[in-house]
Image (cartoon, rainbow, N blue to C red; front, side):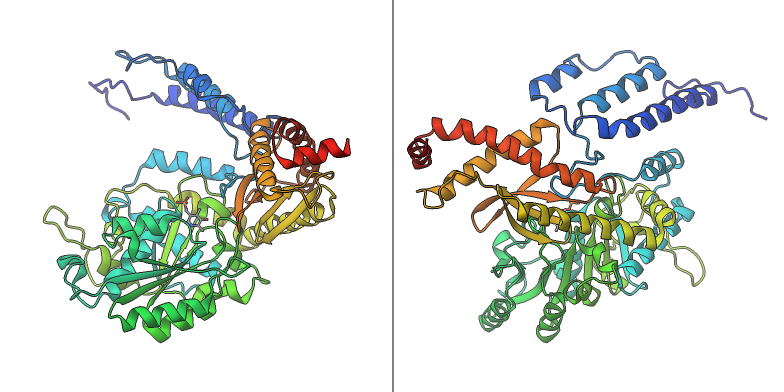
Length: 512
Ligand SMILES: *Cc1c(COP(=O)(O)O)cnc(C)c1O
């Protein structure tokens, strides 16, 4: 029996109010998701148009009706967003989100455990620990590793770098900082295709971006291991301290996978920490037919993966795994006097504030855990394999198309460009013209709402890039793309060529 309460708070909702508004919201979301294929991928509105939707009213003095507020907000978001849940969204590496993840976030928010300490989130912390173990199992990484969920691939990779820095600096780097390495500089090695997190991490950890020694990539965008060996030897001879090699399992531009087993053995030879950035491609290691290069991520000291990419969790959810859990605690633990979270008996629980940079933490593990239970290993293997199969199908379609040039295909990323049929191969400045043409074509494609690829620059060539991390994409969506690209490409080409002073124009006039 509930006693009469003597306080009425403006943010409280009665059970009936919550039920009514919540049911309505769920109905709206269900309709929204069902309508995705019929909507444009993006309304393509300008900054001005978007800002007009919000108006520039100041902070409301008084609150408003909750039900109306939620209705209006749902409509605002549904009608003015770029829809990455659309079957034809293939930009960057941003996935469609599993609906169970949205429900998981609702549930997590309702219970609101603070994941900084076990005492504040007993069952939720255990769910996170189980999620970490299951992710390790999926990847073929030792399930007794340490690990935690963080906001994204950037943070997951940075946690790996911080753990490496503490483990490999031969002095008390957490206490004394970087200046006491007796003049020895801590150095990081990463291929030129590495995602920009490495620069942020080097900067924010005080190493400085100059501490990143870039290793050239080969013609398939994979790290040149001979160059890595040479650089490690030279820098060590100079007296510096190489402490970290980063291998990429699925590069952000083309999905290239570095030769991870070889990197692992080079790191063992040189006593250097081996970190794998698997933010995009890591989960593909779960596939039975994954390449040995990719499966080599199981040999790493630490691995970053992004459940908000190939596990289809809604943003934000990344995971970092560290082979020896002690290394995480060594890198992040402090014991301030205002916390008493030690637990009792010999079973010491995990207090996640000691495993990573965050203090209070949200329950982002729940949506990931729910997805793993909903689809199982079999379900995820099938979805990832389907994405890869569709990207390969696209490569074949563009490869045989007379006006399209297939460029790369790795994991679920296919790159290609539009080549006007009547453009003479001998045209002067043809490369510059094709870059200009495809750049403008991409803008037009993205604004059209018909499909949403992004781009890659491969050896100076501007390519259209389709990255399928989307469980809603079907073969029909892929088959529709060449026609869309060629139609918009012809449109852009006819506008650019006669108007420009490029030699290409002369060719056209000569022919016409
Ligand atoms: C996406 C990605 C990142 C960055 O991850 P966020 O989740 O965007 O922070 C880093 N590296 C690679 C290879 C990625 O694909």
